[in-house]
Amino acid sequence: MKKALYIVLSLMLVATLASACGTNSANSGGNSGEGTSDSPKKVELKVFMNFPRFKEQFDSYFDQFKAKELADKNIDVTIKLEMPNPDQAKQILETRMASNDAPDVFTLHAIADVPRYYKAGYLSDMSDQPFVSKLYDSVKQTVTHDGKVVALPMESLSWGYLYNKTIFSDLGITPPQTLDEMKAAIEKLNAANIKPFELSFQESWIPQLMMALSLGGIVSSEHPDWVEKMNKGEASYGDVQDVFNIIDLIMANGTDKPFEVGSAAGSTDFAGGKAAMWVQGPWQAESILKANPDMEFGVAPLPVSNDPKGTMINLATSTSLAVSPTSKNKEVALDLVNYILDDNDSSALFEELKFNPVAEQHKYDTYPWVTEASSYVSQGKAYLDLSLPNGVTDETAKLLQSYYAKSVSKEDMIKSLDKTWANALKAGQ
Image (tube, rainbow, N blue to C red; front, side):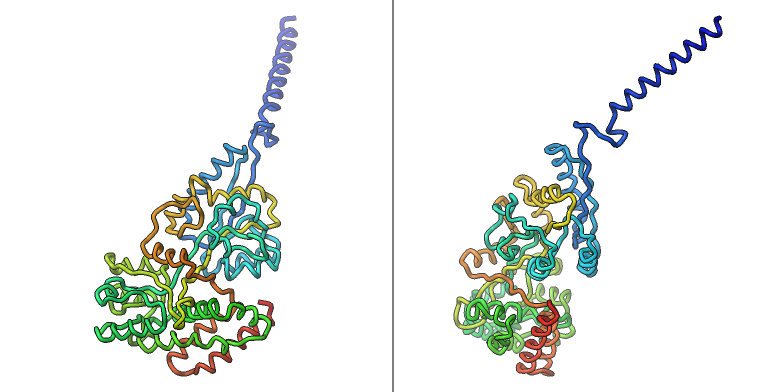
């Protein structure tokens, strides 16, 4: 009897424990994967960015976003961040988008990529998002296409040519606002045995900057519909051949042996006072100051004619953030993009990245050359970077090297650029 009673009590105990375990299991949905109304929703975002040099900064900032999203919306976000080499990033991204494997959030170049990506259906309309009302108007225009804001601008640029403030001050020169004033400044510099311009043509993208600035100034002030007409086959580079006036002046008054000098050596030469001006952008600031931490340089608009209205700063937005229309977690993706311009946190991020301010809440101190360029923008002396078909910029770069070497003429350049533009349009680029 005792043995039978022991067996019955043991079975009752097992049944009780099994019942308790079942109850606990039912009440611990977070561990079983089912979840309850109080458990956070789990979301994974795929984020694709083309500047791995900033991985540490974005890892930290995204951690802040994840904490905020969990606290505010009870969403547990996992961010799968992909940062390939910049040389390969564009090809990787476009391959993935074409194969319907687009990241939720991705970087793109506002001027170069937005028109094509929009046409292909790769960009979400974000016009109604909170960040839009915070943007400076001039910056907002660079990410607006077909009347819609389709990206969040991050890395914006206000640029012209660089000049040595000490040399200018010593010779009583102020940044020229007309072609004749530039010629007078060049005369003063030559008389003082100072080369007016640093020429560094070893890398073709550098001489191309002369065309970018001169074309932007001429088109924006004298031929505002030129790009549109070129796209219709109704115009030519011959219509804007005055761009060569300043280009010829620079080439005739520059440092020797430019094909032996690239961007790094050019920075060292300019920092060392070998020339008073350099048609380069403020993106060279780090290498210039590394060569000469005490150098004071400014940014000024390049004169293209004797009409001061054509002397303008180039406004460009390069790296921007977009959201894929096919994102399965679009609401959270939009939350992340808006957080990039968070009222409380974004200033610290942009200052750490050394990006220009793009929105009202950005109150951090900017570099002197940024402030100087912005002063021209505030006076209305600026234009939006021109949007040219794929391949035109590369062809311009190669041709300008040959033009300096006198192996092609002005007429050769005009014909070749017209042909390159037309071929790009035929190819749908």
